[in-house]
Length: 216
Image (tube, rainbow, N blue to C red):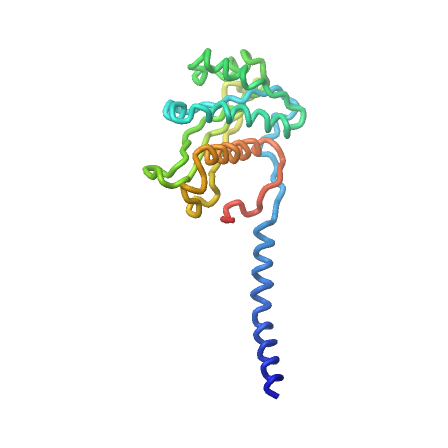
């Protein structure tokens, strides 16, 4: 008799826990879902494109490799994913910007003409850091930029036809990442990879997390 009572109690306990278990599994499945996101701008398809990256002097001084790395990897990612695109060699673009340090104030149509491209993708970085402000003991990488496109054959080739604010962050969960777990090189590489991916996603259809802000 006692054994039957115990078995009944256990079965009731398991029965009470099952809805919570099913709910937790369902939530985890929902968090892992992917969605297709369409390009915000598809005007790079079948065009000749120059990727141009600029930043303030402080960023250029503290992180001299960041700008060429972003330019190189963004150019490569667009080349691999945008249909029919021809991306101007980043070395040609960087040589152009070094020879004309005031290129940012030039008419965009003139820049496009001198580089002989149909589109300019301009990445203007306004924040780049690996740590929180005033805290060198924690990793919290952020790269944020205004990203714009000009069209040489557009109605006003000296103006951006569209602009977006794009941000990359690394590591995904800085509060759970101690300084000893990662070094500066890994943080910078992770940050640049995330930022380049987010910028590139503006220009082609892609798959991404349905809930990108959920900490994993």
